Length: 116
Image (tube, rainbow, N blue to C red):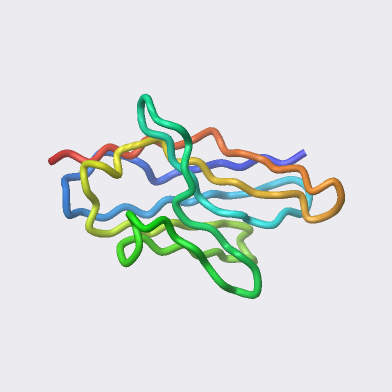
């Protein structure tokens, strides 16, 4: 089994910054990315690793958010700068089992609230 534990969320003023962390334990996994879900909306991709060291970002966060990982610590990060009220959501990390059947796992979510 895999356990993903997110931290770093909170309340911040517009224009501020937060760094989310996702620590993994259990079987070997590959971090896939960060998603978010705002009230009344579907979960959406925020940032992802696309293979070969490349990354992909939602248009709404490009230039403001940065995804990274520390393999030695088995932890993934999301640095969020210049936060806007519309970034308010629950943020989830996602990972996949490294070997077949490549099961996907989700963290419990961490709330990010940006006040305007």
